[in-house]
Image (cartoon, rainbow, N blue to C red; front, side, top):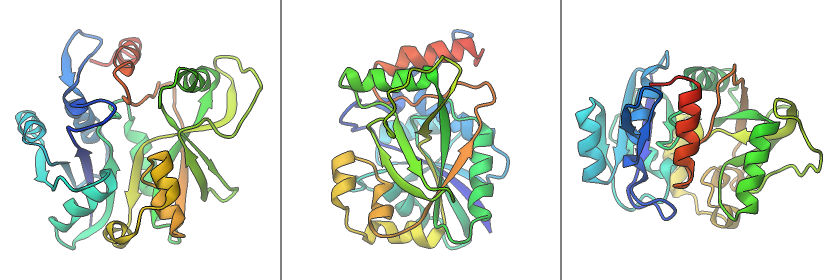
Length: 266
């Protein structure tokens, strides 16, 4: 039984067309595409038996092959990354224990986020899906609020119960807090890290479920599981001094490049 990492990538993003091929400059001045940096983040993870880029676009496929990625071609009808992972799973056969969806806009995802995620789902037999959450410090919370004030859809936040079962995910900053926090202070808000680990049966079932009103309003694919009564485990991960942000909008490119420079990422 294997743990397979799939990186879904599409060219036709409404907020940022061509996003997987956007170039990011590292601390050494070297530029690599977003999809390459996401794939290289996956190669640093212990426990993946295979890593694939899943796409419907020949441009993304061609670029991915140049840096050594295995590519699975999927259809243009996939409405989100989870559906694309489900279709990719159908191309891989039955000998899969777990599928990890590393979305192609998260090149700053540390290896231990993914390793902890896999361990968390293995330890929770009642959960069919798991996803990481990272407690925001004051700096990150301020950045999330600033995006919303500017009318940008930035990071996603998560709320969960005392047993770490997800209650809701939102592109709004939840829960509400009016308190002002110091830059490095812990806050009650959790940044949802856009990575998922699925049990194969749950992933195969996902495309057969009708999108609910919450998924459609928020534009968050994981809400389909919640709206159909499936349990999502939130696995809290630790930053360990690393900065984290996803590339959601063109404005995020200089923000991520600045983080890479500060962390001396090549």
